[in-house]
Image (tube, rainbow, N blue to C red; front, side, top):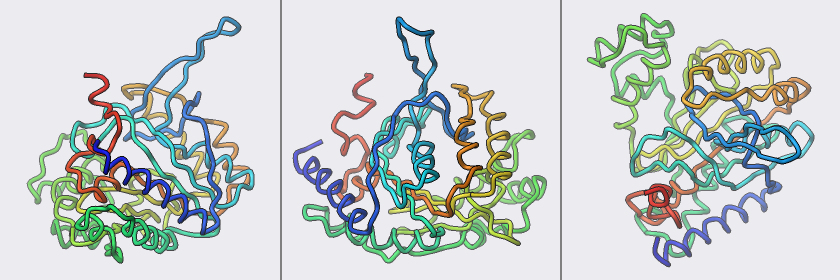
Length: 326
């Protein structure tokens, strides 16, 4: 990382804090270690242990996001909050946009849904695009307003299949065959969808300005709220220059659906590279009265890649993880 990028990183973090603080969000600071996590089948984690002469050894995990701690604060009445912190994800693919240790921005807005968070994100991107020292072409990619495309529309226009007609596993498999996507006989609906999406849809998303891809299939299990009467969930992802940079939900508040998610996802985590327990305390916290809200998680390093024009994430991190272990 050169000196100009160091200054730009500092300016970006300062502007992020200014933007959210001016909007009334409270900055919080939560632990990086946890004895249990939110089980997410697509994420592998780092494991460590607490050693003490006064108690037995205790298994701990580095957080893949601050979500579990921030949701406890929300349930306790924190109001609108945000956090900038380190996050850790194991088993990540190697590439220009991935790092096992990275900086994440997460913010939660009470009494708001994913559509309100789209508007806030539009404002946020315009604000950070004006940071002095940003690469002009990178700043232009952020300026927006964000193009908004429903997942169903993207699948139809970019891959030529009707996602709404593929709610069942066999229908999704038939679509994959027609599209000449290779898959295994035991692949789940979610795996089949991801193969099609990552092969035909994501690489062809428009790149002329920020893109919000919204209304993801409810068949992908998350803690986002389902949209009543539809096969979709209230979720979106932000793409900038073709690179996924943020994820947003209208957060699930139904205790039964939250409990079911934890049970089913925890079962899948039993075969993970690093198995970990589900945070049962969080389930109880959410069931006891979690407020209506929307949450956004955004990768600061990827955002800085765009702002600086850096071709790889290692160019915007002080000590790239790949270098420290080489």
